[in-house]
Image (cartoon, rainbow, N blue to C red):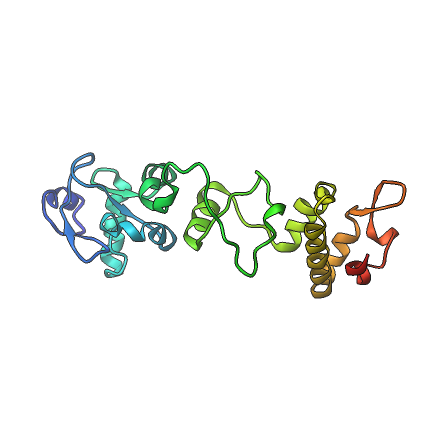
Length: 215
């Protein structure tokens, strides 16, 4: 395999190991089925299409040779890129996402109240979906404290007509502050308490946050 012309000698031979345990043929670029060389994270994205993925469990020496062949851009082995992700999304995403205008979502115990989410948020149901968004679209899930500080408390006036939602917000804020002093400091600087004057003020200037649940 040290011969530079070795990849050319492989053309047509069904010796390319795939992640599903089978073998496919080496072909010239643009011929035959495309096979992707992936990282572990990318492999997880393609786990439902492993017949398109090089077997990463083969010996390291052979794997490095196959990686070199992929980098040469002369064969049907391709490095997995964002462009290929976009092309393969119909195979990767859940079937119920196909042609859907709206997706159902059932938050778990760590979920937040439905009414707190607006059009700025994309809803996911699995680690696979989150991985796609984080890795290829720079979209990630904020920490709960960050979510309330940046996306909920500045909009609290929108929820005044929904007492149950306001109550849920205050309960969550109280728990967050009890569990993390840094959260308390950040929330002290967020104007989400409605004063008698009608202005929104910082809670540190108006109430004792330890009693926020009763305010």
